[in-house]
Length: 202
Image (cartoon, rainbow, N blue to C red; front, side, top):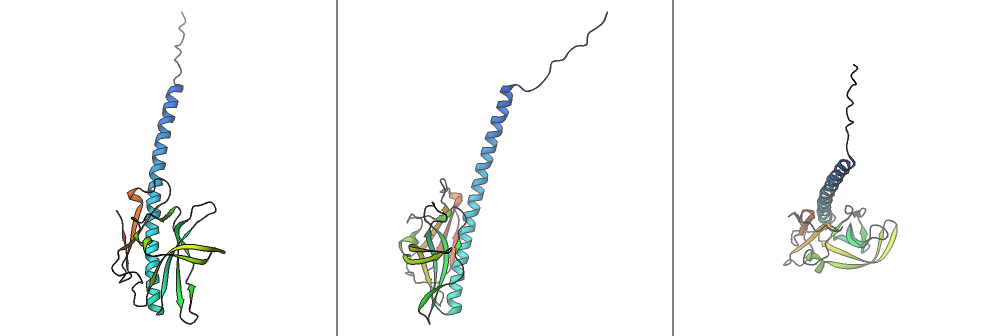
């Protein structure tokens, strides 16, 4: 008598199991992407704070070495067409005693993408004391009219033109929705008498 070999059933995933695996993978990818976005955002804010502090130090040093007034400015402009204007472009202006005019010292520097100054006065009190309107600004080959700017003027002795009794700081944050997270904030404090700055993180 011939014996027929047993036919084993094929094994594999059912459609329900496959959809379950795909759903879990989608959740993991979403969580990883959100986490990486937060890390990159915090890193950009930290870079912006370091850059602004460095530019402040450079302006202070320039005022002392050239024995003249030097203005540190943060311009409220749009980075790209269609963007909302924000305080995100830093430049230094040096006063020329001979021509009696302000001259641009070096190229303007942009804060990292999506980072800007928090414009709420309780978060950035310097806005209540050091905002001016510039009649004309040349930036990236374009001439802009009536640009709002945060301005701190350094004197040759290293001090600033700010009221010595005041407390002055700016808060930098990610301007994208959700950028108010504490991990994505950096505060820049400016001492009016010494002209030095400190970076404070939560």
